[in-house]
Length: 185
Image (cartoon, rainbow, N blue to C red; front, top):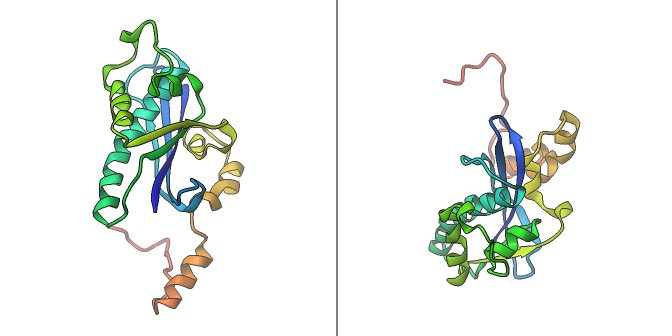
């Protein structure tokens, strides 16, 4: 099993001129098609104020790449050899920067810690690639949606309760019942 990631960002969508990074981590085979549900999702406000949408996308790639290093190490310790982790983005400027196909004129505007992604690609840890935004699962974690959208998308990110109850029954456990008056702490 291979770790794969969809990365996305929304520019200036948070208070105080902040941007949001999103990531969707899943396990796959060699063909990069999802073979499991999500193993990790990222929905994080980018600490720095980004000067453009491309900077926000590079920031999201950085956040997702940093978190992928730990997941890669864990999978390798579990016996799953990891080739370069495929990370999908929907921004061609961010992809050009990371893959060295684009040299920005004002390199000082790009944070120095983002240069780490070029180094990790040179080390064959990551493989960054572009696909249109419609199929990017990381997009869901960067936008504000109405409740109806959340209900529609719920099955893509959560295991249905009927499946969980069937798994618990197969293991000989009682279905878990949540009581509103039961104290949690």
